[in-house]
Length: 428
Image: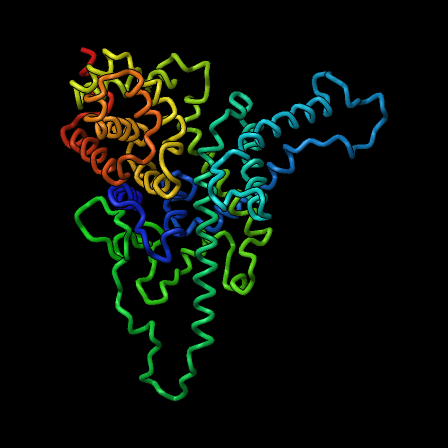
C-alpha cells in the first residue's frame, strides 16, 4: 500500500536503531522513487530485467576504438569527423575526467568514500560510472556539477543495506553454532522463539508523539512482513530486493561479490534517474528563468516565507538578502551540503514520501529560515544574515526542522491550500 508507506515514512521516517533499518530504508526509497513496482510479486522479475538493462547500457555506451581492427584510412585518433569513434572516445574521456574530479570531492570526511582504501576506490568507480551512463543517455543535460551529491546518499543507502544484512546473517550463523542441539524435547524452544516483539530503539527520529515499534514500519508498508522476532529475519519478499545477497555470502569477509556490487550499482542508477526526472530542470541553465527553472523555485521560497513569517521576510527583503544566495544550493542539492549524511538520509525519508516532494522541500526551507529568525532579526545585517543562512552547519536539530515543516505543510493541505495557492496569495 503506497499510501500507507508514504504516510508512515513521511511523518516518522524509517524506524531507526533496528538491525533492519538500512534494508527498510533501501526498500522504501526504491518503492517511493518508483523503481520497484507496487505489486511486490513483480519485484524479482523487475529487478532482474532492470539490472540486465543497466549492464547492457554499460557495454553499449562505452566506446573504445583502440582495439578495433580496420585500415588507417577508415578512422584516425585525431579525426574530428561526425560519427568518428575516436572523436566520441576523446569526448567521453573528457566527460569522465569532469565527473571524476567532482566524485573525488564527494563526502570526503566519510571513510565509506575514502579513495585511499580499496573499497572506497570501488565506490568512486561505481558512482562515476553511473553518472557517465546517465550523461550518455541524457545528452540534453549530460552531467552537471552537483549531480554527484544527489547520487551519493542513494548509493550509500543501498550499500549499507547489504552490509547490514551481511552482519546480521553472520550473527545468526554464530548463534546457531553456539546454540546446543536439543534432541527429543518437543517442548524445547530457541531463545529467539520466546522473545516478544520488542520496541525499536530510536535515537529520537520519531516526529509524532507515538513511540515507534516493530510494527510501525512493517513489510506491509515496505516488504509485506519484516518479522518481529528475536532474530528479525526477512521473508522471501525481502530477499527479492536484497541485491542477490544470501546466507552463503555471510561467511565471506568481502560483502560485495562482483555480482552483488553490480546489482547495487544498477539499482542506484535507476533510482537516481527517477529522482533526476523530477529535478533535472534545476540543473538546466536554459530553464533558469522559466516557470520550470530554479529561479521560479527561489521566488516560491521567498513568497512562502512571506506567507509564514511576514516580518522576517520583510526584513530580509529590505536587506536585499535574496533567497538565491542560500536557497539555490538548498533546493538544487536537496540539503546534502547543509546536514551530515545521517540527517540527510532521515530528511530524504520524509522528502521522498511527501505527496509533492518539491513543495514539501519549500516548506522545509522556510522552516530553516524561521528557525533562526531571532538571530537574523537581532543582527539586522546583510553580511551576518548571509553567513548564517549559507553556513547553517546543523545549528538547529533536524527533527525540529522536520516537525515545523510537516506542521506547516499539513496545516495547509488540511485547509485545502496547495503550495502554489499559498505562494500566489502573497502576490495578489
